[in-house]
Image (cartoon, rainbow, N blue to C red; front, side, top):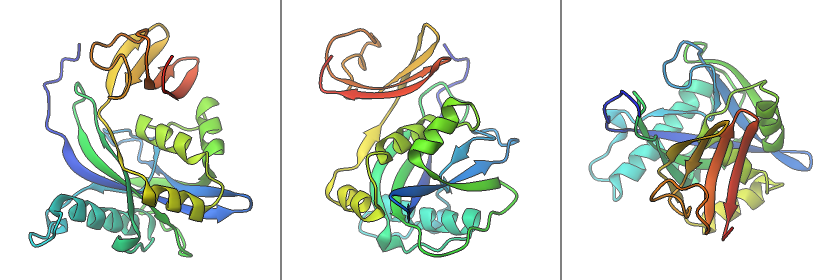
Length: 229
């Protein structure tokens, strides 16, 4: 058990910027300053907290609209890229598990990157790379880069697409997924269970039934999703 008290997740937003690269697609990953307390040194999509000025009381869906504005602002602040709010497709929402000293309630959006040049701020962000999802996952396996669980899972899902148009079209007709992970200690590491998993309620990772989980083992990470096992 963690010694940290349960803290309220802070609203935040992330944008997955995509571009075509030959016969595949690439996404922009930014390396966070290693001195940052939350995933310092990790490679992530552009994003950050939703600020008070991101809220417009007259918005039809105030929180989602604020998240869109925050994602647009963070893309510009952290990477120097301009994205139109209406181009953002809401694809998932992640809540940091209980037991962490910092927790976030994060809206994930996807959009085409456009033709802008990446300009990192040199403060919170110290480096950037355009990477195919499979290359990023391979770099994580080789311990060349660190990926937070939401980034790893999102890249795993992106790996099935070969063009930006196909990816965004699929996201546009699909329903956003909501992730509220529950992490459990297992031999060699941790298993993070998501709500559709048969073991989600009681933490039994061996319970027969649907699988939706991320194995975070010393031997390697693996995202698993199946109707039944």
